[in-house]
Image (tube, rainbow, N blue to C red; front, side, top):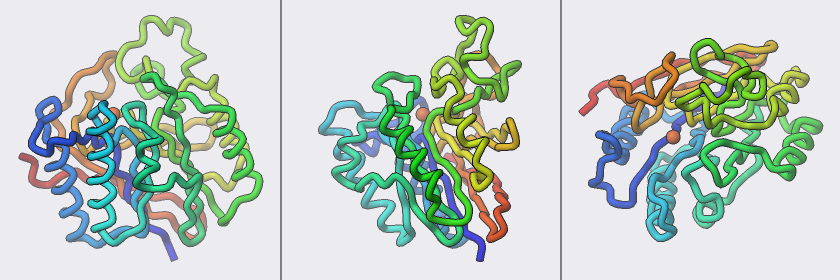
Length: 265
Ligand SMILES: [Fe+2]
């Protein structure tokens, strides 16, 4: 039996549900997307890949995490979240215990925390050791990895490169100026694991599929604002908010498609 997974990412929710974020209402977008998904049937698993909250006071962030956990519970489907650079992992844990992995059928998702306290991402030594242990003793035939920050770069003329491979990093602007900074450790580790079939990230606010060394990175439109792809800067894109659906087969094949909000207000 194949496994269905939906990735929701970069929700950037605000405690005041009436407020907009850069011209989008994050709660309205999320609720419309979840309603659209409900019409087509719930997945086996939702993965929320960070930047869940755009409010930075602890009180407001707690409100956002509580409301989001309640909303996801309402779907009736299994779900998990990982933090992004805008999140507070300790506050998230008050509403949903962080799990290092989740197993659905023949698939184990390894869930990473790349929050470094800065806009770019890092993997703490404890996070690396936990990942290595999970790779060493898989709990399912196939594995996939979710991390907020992009482990390979996504921008023009550097797509698929590691940040440390850039000859002139000071000229990089936009989302690639704040990627996962790990000297390629994550990607190079995963490439050596044939049971690892995919890596997904948030942060990018774009639909991309990038292959390197036999492994594919999937990035996904935000449920909030979109960033233009293929420019060396941050610029808002007019495309509708969206999500990514994965079909994970019982012979290890990953199929995915991006869906966008059909009626965008
Ligand atoms: Fe984001």
